[in-house]
Length: 364
Image 1: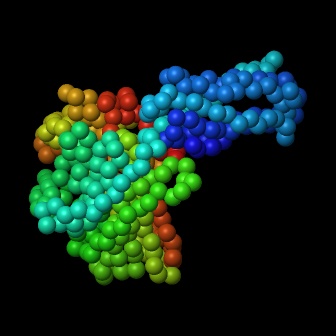
Image 2: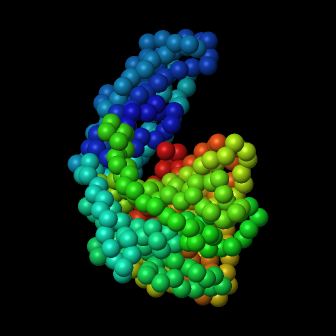
Image 3: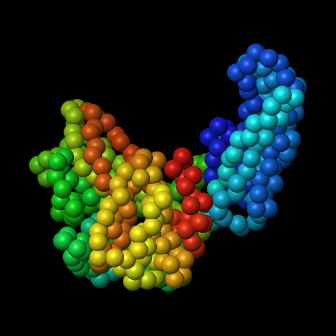
């Protein structure tokens, strides 16, 4: 259960219920009687549905704790609206509840595949496979026995003009001013550890953390941490890319993520989507950078993978005849001893419209 003020306009949960706080205030010195009606769709209910405010003026208002009941076991977005009415005006404020999964526990286990260390994160609806020594990268997102990612595991290959290319989801780290697409992490030692759900945490994210302290001369003093996390029976993967400056002086670098979807299809046939953008297979490449979100879709099945971040540095990368991928590219300038955390969410949906229901993740 997650309790947030309605000013955030988003409540996220994995339970069949959620709680929120309704705050009614005014900037006017006039005194009004008012009422707030709270409604939500898709079979969800809110209690109380009406909140009376006997005296609404600047510095005085009302606060009400709301209980939101969701249909049992149903995930996704529930859109709602709070309507404030007085004798003089009416004001509507939209909000949404995102049920991201269930309270089922996520299990994490270390395995070996093709002679390489692989970590398996099972959330009951699918499994994530992470190979610290291959890229490092998340080599699989298995749903119904199908890998939703295209990976070159266990041997890297080429992609367009790039080599080595690992596929799957792989992080990149390189010196400031460098444009080596594959980055340098594949040359470094990578350690892995389990990330446990913290008791009492609103959303019990669990999975695997990768850690590296690069020895490249221009990256010394940095530590990169990348987490692949999920929730019980969730269609969402949370990717946390954390950079630590271990020195008391400023450090600069470039970092990125490459996400190579397959979605049960030939990746070269996937359609790239963005805000007002649709790109189908063609011989001509194009990149759309610095977006809040981007997606790729299998038009035959409808299956869609969305990438959304709190920072507008998500990219849709169309490599023409080689296919369309998602990613992040940016520069980081870290003050001495600074820790910077960048969070991105990947969502598997049955279609583009359902995928866009999760755009609110950018505000989590």
